[in-house]
Image (cartoon, rainbow, N blue to C red):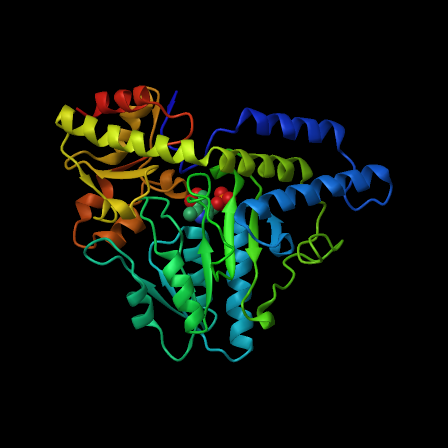
Length: 377
Ligand SMILES: Cc1ncc(COP(=O)(O)O)c(C=O)c1O
């Protein structure tokens, strides 16, 4: 199998599988138990939390373990919106129109609950700018929402500048960084981001585990419990912790961080090779996303192949043992035109159904790209 769909999920690092197996076998104590086994499990969990917090450069007290990014996005957004409305800060949120459904659908739900949301579409150049966010803000605005890297087209959003401006204007900011972590580790120490979300299976860890970093600039927005019960996660998310996966996630993020320079170089080389090979093979394509290559991630590529239905190409690729995608994994099962491509190219409906996503991981090679190019011409 030639796997070019790493934005959907990534293969697990062998070292991570080993840590999970060891923890499952040898560390099955409940971290809440007060005897030695429990204390050891708790110690391993504290170490894992610290490892992840150190990579992101945040206080480990602000890091909560969750079942993944969908939960983290739901938890933080619902809380921040409701609490800030309750405090009388307003009822308006500015968000990009290209968020993952785990953000977008929460915002649409909030719109049914008395909130107003302005969705920022990419401009003609495919950019989302701080200026657009500022212009869309009103005296009712409470917060801004922007992802770090888009999961369908790979556009890089200006989260540093958005975070600084949001702080200046007294808004909270929520950042879904799922597709950035693993390729570009974000140092949060100097970034005034209130809520920051990651998911282990996008950086070679297990599925079903993720985190939320919540450290609001405004103390009144301190996170409220998501689940009530045994009081785990500082009373905010009760339920016996999934220690094997927590330890696996910590190992994955540490390995990713340790090899980040190699990864950045590899992504860059593969991206150059992909576009050179497309040109050499004479494939007709247009790159979707930001027109400025510097604002495009090197690990997620979205190509419009005129007159090639992506649904048919996906099947052809599958028959040759190549996994690619036509959009986000969550909508891949149902062949709906991509909401993200609609936001980028509102007047080009053919582009919504004739585009494919190719995404690289640590295991991707030039041979994988050659195999893909072979089926494109
Ligand atoms: C940008 C982005 N946010 C959130 C998610 C959801 O992550 P999870 O699978 O951990 O719920 C994904 C996964 O596709 C994603 O790409």
